[in-house]
Amino acid sequence: MGKSKMFLSFVLAAYNEEENVLPLMDQITQEMRNILSDYEVVFVIEGKDQTYPILQQYQQEHPQIPIKLIYQAEPRGLTSAFKTGFENVSPQTTHVVTMDVDLNHKPEELSRFLPKAKEGYNIVIGSRALAGSAVNEVPLWKRAVSKIANTVFNKAFKINVKDKTSGYRMIDIGTIKEIAPLVQSRNFEGLMEFLLIANKKGKKIAEVPITLTYRQHGDTKFKLFHAGKGYVKLLLNINRRI
Ligand SMILES: Nc1nc2c(ncn2[C@@H]2O[C@H](COP(=O)(O)OP(=O)(O)OP(=O)(O)O)[C@@H](O)[C@H]2O)c(=O)[nH]1
Ligand SMILES: [Mg+2]
Image 1 (cartoon, rainbow, N blue to C red):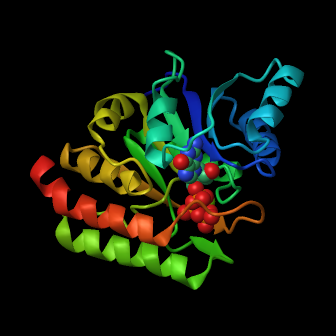
Image 2: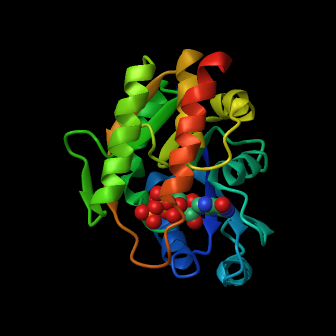
């Protein structure tokens, strides 16, 4: 990257997150005042709660904040939503930031990602599995699922990443454009698939510690049976493709 200026595009998938979107926007705008980078926020909103109208009103009241809203009522899955968002970032984008909209991930921790991205890492992952990481109030079964998924995929693939299912990431735009179209999963397992393909193609991946706090508002979209099926399907077909 050298000294050239970064332009961050936040790509945020929101499925019924009406209680969380405004606090998240406050946190992002505050953090971006500190980071002094140019940025935009691209929301891919699905579901029928008030998330979309709330953000439309926010957009009207804050014309100085660059925000794009993409909406459809029917949910297509997390990875499909991200892909739509990636296709709609501005041309000046140098890096994409993905994060949960439910306040799991803290924008104030972005300052840990920036130096790694500037060093030239293609993908910087906010990791729950490093010394210095913390996970607050997350149910035991959810921790177990991410542990199992990470262990199984570590055994099956040579990939030196501890937290392969984290949705908090900073990715350079070249990597987004190259890898996202190759990802076939539509839901949560697409996070893993993206990394496996990127790793195979020699992309440089770094992890930084984050503190993840469990959602206080709204329902989880992570369905154990559905996600389990997705991971198994991925495990069975990815070898043939990469
Ligand atoms: N647009 C869209 N967003 C989605 C979809 N599925 C999940 N999301 C969003 O993706 C992010 C991750 O989903 P979560 O429900 O937080 O999944 P999780 O973090 O594993 O589970 P929690 O423990 O509940 O936080 C959230 O911002 C969701 O609103 C979808 O089908 N469409
Ligand atoms: Mg979440």
